[in-house]
Length: 327
Image 1 (cartoon, rainbow, N blue to C red):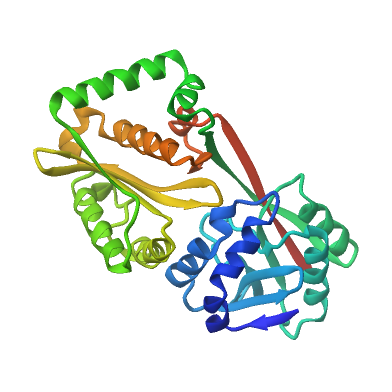
Image 2: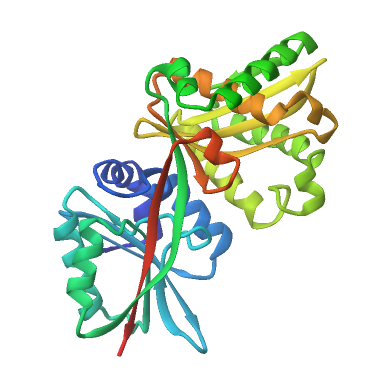
């Protein structure tokens, strides 16, 4: 395998992401450069890149060190552990190359932390087979994300929701229309400066949301850095989708995400707390899904599992982490 510098990986982002699209049994969006490179720069900027390419595809990881753990090789996106390090159409061949690389690498690693692995995948079985007997193996945390099918358009989507949920959405839509709430949908944000402007606009809403007081939003810190890097990347490839709800000329809610490989990955959504009675969160979700269906998008990935997401999405997809230690 050929080692890649940061500059070389940035130059190969489209080819890398094409390999992601060909890879079975992974979270495609969260394994793409849209996600992993901003996450690495925002959350682990002091860790070195450890990326390689071959005829079989790509491997992208980082290297860190700790007094108690030693040197560890980890996902570039380690916060949610959704990204797969293996990108290519031949899972068995690529995983075997990775195992050989780990055995012969000049990096004197102590621990491998490999995330985004489906327990039923070729990657899982090849990793167990390749490392078993020579290394200590364990399972790390699992991650479940909620994904909704958009098959059949908005009517098909609604048909897979409960009757109570559909009634609540119809009521919210009707009340929103009566109140004069309008939808501002943006499916093209190029040049990249437009993405920054949209993010600033979302941050204004975020400041007036419950998240601001709870310190769980995107107003500052690494999360803000993460999206400042990600959104222009999406915009440059016409993959960014943004939606605002406005009332009397004022933004009261937003929802944004990225389209990739036939699916939409929801990234952030929030609303002005003063307008909670209008159900702005549900309305923003519903209008976003309506626009995505018109575009022909096939799935809506709402991200990590939460109770409310189960009402919106019928499928739970699990991936887990494998931990390899030198004996």
